[in-house]
Length: 114
Length: 116
Image 1 (tube, rainbow over the protein chains, first blue to last red):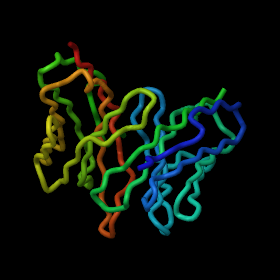
Image 2: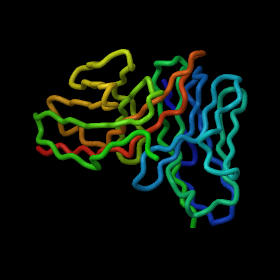
Image 3: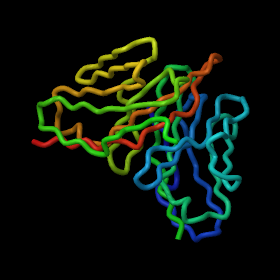
């Protein structure tokens, strides 16, 4: 079946502009996660949606970052007033929501802020 | 402060030999551990996991060992094959009693290179 998809695959933006990144999780998966991987770093957790519960935003690095998940499916990650340090690969993952089900990752969106 | 540490940025192993990738963690609340494999320009793919109630989990050529007292886990790949060349990430989570799991905490990864 179809895996997690993300768009765009690459995004170049000017410092100060807003960007929106999209994630389409695996159909039926109730849990959705956003991570980012900066150059030379591991994956950094950003935000987690589980069903209709309030999202866990504990990983968001600043209030310029926000995410929503409409209808329990597609999610968008918005970064306002982008800064150069926001340059990274942004990865989305989904899972069934069961405790021991692994997370399935999308290919990521490479964001470059110039 | 890094809660999951992979102290070897890279590891080179000859084809057919055993590859051992190590991972240490500091958060005693972690109760579920996973290994992911990542090729360039692709998202990580799940490899193998282990619950804190176990000390070993095996799946084909891949075995994960967990030493809770030392807060250490390792991934063994035997025999190593050229297609195993990739970046391997160790990850940990705390599972919620009501189901689901918190976001994973990842190490920085180890680049495994299998030499023919």
